[in-house]
Image (cartoon, rainbow, N blue to C red; front, side, top):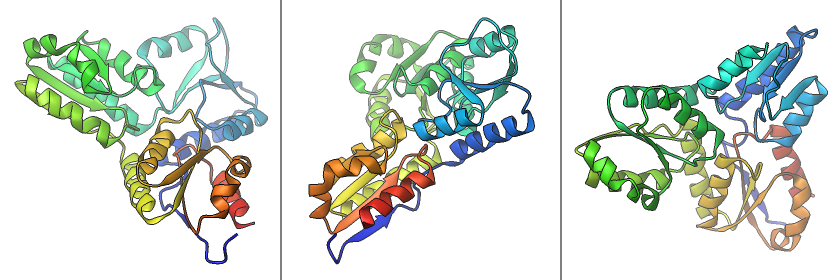
Length: 289
């Protein structure tokens, strides 16, 4: 390690409020109900270590809801469609809703827009579980709902949007502002009335801004977190545009980048909202060896 190497950890690295709340609540739920089965529909958060730890404590992750069951079925931070809540109850489970409060707000804004006659645009990735749930909640009240991440996707609906005149926008909580801005600019040209709810969560915004600032000050950025995590990959994307950046899930991957790390004097570290503190600590420990 170079004598003068400086390693800086982001202030907003690791668990966000919603993730911390979800993990702690599930652990407490199992502790207080040792005799009851507790399962989570889908990964509670995008982190294999956390999922394994929960399994070790008797909290099972299921990808598909069985026809019948018992005990608690936890709704993860991304939320779920009303149909899934109903299916959980019909199967015999007790639903336990741990949808992130910020995601709940997006769902509510989406519903209000559709109810008030706006053509709803959800800025986000169509297949992301959070977006799937937002869309499903809005579709209960009207069919004018589009999911898009760029202008090209929206142009397919340009005539319909012009006909409707009233357009409302909500955003996947982990999206980037740089994705939202061009969409808003395009919609301004096709709508008579435009309502935009910037529902990118405050934690995501702070994290992204900090990653950008750190990338300008460091020769290498290390982003720690799951490759399946939207907010983590966005941090890597932001940093890559500015400086040399590597995205790892744990300290074990650092060996692959030994040549780059050995030559670097200023290293910045940030981590996604689903990355536990102990993994961040192990990365720093490995870099200091």
